[in-house]
Length: 342
Image (cartoon, rainbow, N blue to C red; front, side, top):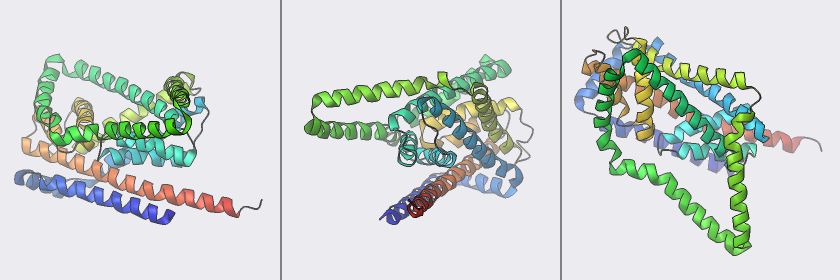
């Protein structure tokens, strides 16, 4: 039964991944397809291969930082289970926004027995820290690029995203997880009240909320604060480097200044929030930014597509492999425990 469940997970993940790529390709214009194919043929794959490697390294760093946040609330999850949960988070976020965060916490609950509300609390803190880091990126852009130039790029970004944010599919995807959670929690509340009564439900809710907020503020009690800060800096420098190495893959973009990568990091991060994995908007956002740095539109869309495809493939392959390895490693551990002499 467990093997069948694992196989179904793998097949569904593989089908979703392949379907995502086919759907995006079919919705591209013929000119964009031609430029993308040309870029893939001419690209220097030494530099291209560095981007997913840097992304993987950033996830190793994020994993360790998350473990540091979990320790003050009494949990020290095994590294690889935590890492696979992080990888699976990015994988599921390609399909439905915020689904990955929920999946990440449930994975840790299943394999490391960390209550969902506790890991969810640390995840909320983690996202707040990421917002602060993104704010530092924004201030750095203003410092190097100037307010007027930034406002020009932001105005173009708003035009691009106006239609996408109001699209039916985007709205449905954004609200899919919250609606599913509300329906699920409502069903659980009715079941729990019938079985244990309203008072028990109220006690349970307050207990979970208290646990959630304790986890949110757990970062104050992290003992390894210098390590935590260094991990955060290293992770965001890797994100920046992911954009910059892509420039080196084509002659037309190889001399772009570092500030352009900062701009791409800032607006690329916003694009990924607006649509699952930045689908339909990420390459266009990169194009808009690079055109502002005097890159031809056809080359700019090509580098945007090249960057998006390589990153997305990395997340798809990493997520599917993590689903497989998470099941296999824990299956072996369960088997070894069963055969240990009592």
